[in-house]
Amino acid sequence: MSKRPQLYAGMAALFAAMPLAASDDNHFSVLLRLQPELVQVSGSAADSRDRTGWHLTDGWGGGNKNSHNWGALFIDGGFRLGEQTRVVGRLGFNLDMGGLKDGDARQREVEAGLEGPWGRLVVGRLETPYKIAGLGWDPLNATFMQARANLGRSGGAFGHGGYIDNALSYSHAVGDLRFTLFGAVDDLSDLGSGGTSGNHAWSLAVNLPLGPVEMIAAHIDASEFKQGPDKRTGTKLGLRWSHEAWTLASHWERRGSGLENGDFFHLNASYRLDDAWQIMAGASLFSDGEADNDGNYAALAVRYHVDRRFSIHGGLRRNDRDSIGSETIAGIGMRIILATGNLLARDSRP
Image 1: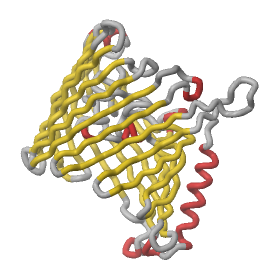
Image 2 (image 1 turned 90 degrees about the vertical axis):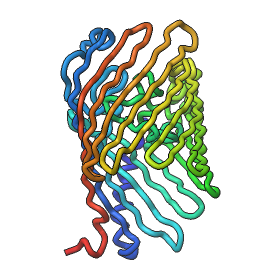
Image 3 (image 1 turned 180 degrees about the vertical axis):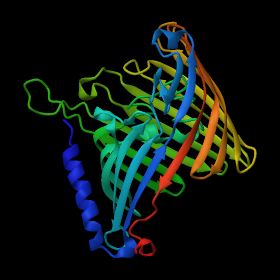
């Protein structure tokens, strides 16, 4: 079962302990992200779900508004422990245009741990390395035009969306190469055993930048995790190239029968006209692993950056799958970032 009460207690202890450390080494900040989007939805797949028409949303995925969204509230803290080690923590809440999400989706990261020259070790409710590797490579990620969960790239907790409880993550850099190892405890007991089932989830990712080129490789295995289906596995390889105003990225995913059961081939491009205007496009093919049930995704968008805290975006996305038909979305949205900076810094005190 969920260990969040203990995690919340640990976070409270972390924040309470910060004044005990030297004030220059303390950090406590609050970050709020909001993304209202007004969209118009059409297509046979949308009609079958009764999703056609106008919607106010934050993100869109799998045919649902306010899904795989961007809005969030993060509370971050940390303090130095010794010469080279820091205690760190984050409490994240999941927000969309309906307010604070309900149930298990209410929290984003709930983590606490240590970091230093030896790496970063955190426990709690975490994102998987599979999700994080290349997540931001899609310039439309977390908008209504994103590829994830829209036949462009995988979604869900074991893909590019969601968080997993009772998890531990270790990351470290060796030169330019960075790797992350992850494990999550399956706390559902086998019938009659009184112990955990042993079908624990694990994931790893490797990131290697080589000049203008960056490469990623990631894998996840959550087969029968929390008594779910078998073959819940995924493997991802990606490549991104950046030069001046251009960025091109692509990745391939192979997903097991317990997940999407197929392969994603995704390509996107971004071009910065100047400091303000950005043009973005993406295209994907989904190849079904067994049935003749393939799909595709395409999007074209523009974003205007007013400054680093506020931007406006608009565009069009369409995805189509043999079995369920098409979904077309056009709209406009904005991103707003409100951040406090370090609330414990000396110059911010009265």
